[in-house]
Length: 564
Figure 1 (cartoon, rainbow, N blue to C red):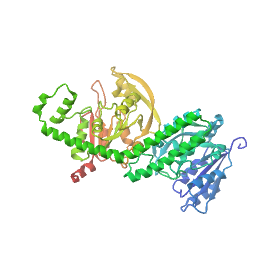
Figure 2: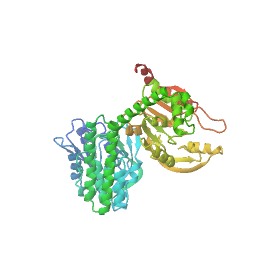
Figure 3: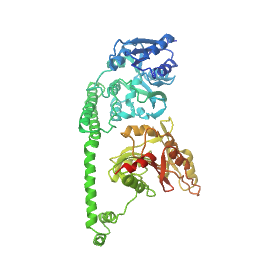
Figure 4: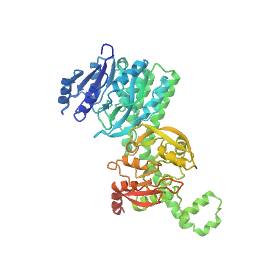
């Protein structure tokens, strides 16, 4: 049969991979495609990797095992398996990842039916390092390929690094394409992002083709990537300017690689090269700003806020309420001043939940500057559980699946990270999102959407596909540790999302969760299962507005007395 089919070479570089290499080898030797060779290059492992690989090589004739006398580095080892390959197609395999049985055959079919493509890949997800549980999906890679060279290169440049674009390096490539760029090579000034620059160089040669089938599982937290680094891609908060300076130097080397590859590309006009280089410069500037702001700008803003608060406090002492009659009641400024002086407080939330949370953090937990995650943000200000804190200088992440509402939030909450996604509760990478004529009732639940419509006041206006992200992965990507406050209001799926939350890994001090169903016929129900779940996870109900419940971490509450 192999006489009629092209040979696929799978290169598996490994060093001390005893923990997961059996799983990876089992995943590869059970591929449905019959014509492949599996080349293992052991970089002088000191654990049981050699014994495991020799065991498999004795059992499966497709496996060829080689061992380096000394550890020659990951870059050498990745190139070594490429040099030893003899197939028409080639792919790198990491010693801790997993593939569905149809992965190789699907990739071969894609390259056969798309002769101009240089690489084939599939939709992928991320699994946990320890037990292989689902972490997140990566639907974003589908947005990169394009027949137009300029378009696909600009798509790649503009996509955030944490969205998984480096994973293309695990796709099935045409051997002549990967050999033409000399395999694993440093295109930038340093190791940062080396894998992504190799992918970018391949994109400069030809298009990629991606299967929508989920066939590849990347182990989250693995250590076998060719870039030989574990950078957090601009998400980590750096402690001082010296660290920021070193980080920016690494980023410069990474983005320099893009400019270098653009110069080498023959498929672009001079104008297109200039536009792409401008995109690279813009992205570098954005990254620099993210690095500098937490260390340099945010402390200044906090100090300025403190000075302003003291000034307002003094103005309250000087300007007593009796003087308010002399102020114009029609003036917006005077109205705000009156509110400050009289001690009035403005709530943007549905039932004053933001004022309760504000009291919790300022008076009980003694945190004036904290982070938040607002899931189901709906609007930048209206019915918002977080806008009050945004006004006070706090920052966080707003998640809103409705594209129209998302644009409004992004426009007004410029200092927040705004995501036009939904929160997934399973392995699906996207889901139907039901937009109602009353946008407050938008939901991912078809059952809930149809129930709302059955009351007669509102109807389903539109159903759209929205990408999904796991809540734990979202927090990992966007917070140095975890948010202090999480607000969840997602019409029918609040309980399901909380069931997927990793409370052993993340411990926000405060949650605000919608715990009442919507109804127009007095059949609404209090969701006591949410309260029971939160109690079981070490949280207690601090306040309840009937529509929403506010939960506090028992440990954080117990320790509050030690804060003076």
